[in-house]
Length: 113
Length: 114
Image (cartoon, rainbow over all chains, first blue to last red; front, side):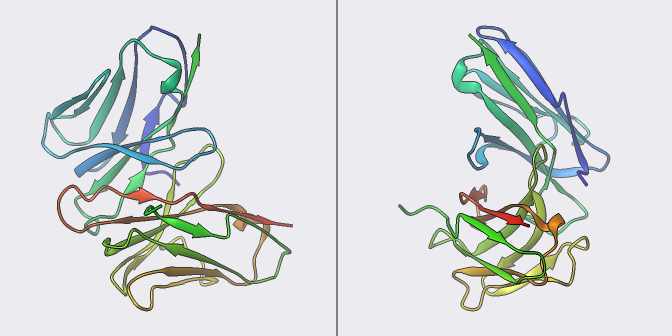
């Protein structure tokens, strides 16, 4: 089962609106990565966060790593139809082997024009 | 195309049969991962290699599953005596061991056990 929890499971967004998806781990993470999977496709790497409290931006996407390194968020502004897909966070636990990722169940994003 | 490739893309098999999947990683990547993904779930870690060494195998993985990476390049994942519960998408990914080491995923092999 998934050891990294993501909410919400589904997100219906009107084009142009903003939304946020959250990722939570019960254990401390050494780093967290975010991936996007388009319908029928495979996961594609978006970003990696390593430092406590780190914030990174990619155009309309803002990623944040919590101070305790147990949670993360992805905020998308002015949603476009190209944002459709499932967004996964994947955490590397400090107690796990280096490079081993635990994926969340994902947030499936549907954009209404 | 220099990305991760997987073969076959689809496999339909009868319960009890053995199946083998192949993954060719990006050539300079020394890490190779296998995941299983079912509908509505994220990729579930199965096992991973650094070069030819298998570093870890999921405790959730049945003994019917075995993986190899004999020369540190391509890898195979074999499932023996398949069960209906094995039906899933099997994803392979590769990465470097330095720098950001993000994982690059292949297109997957969709297994259907009837």
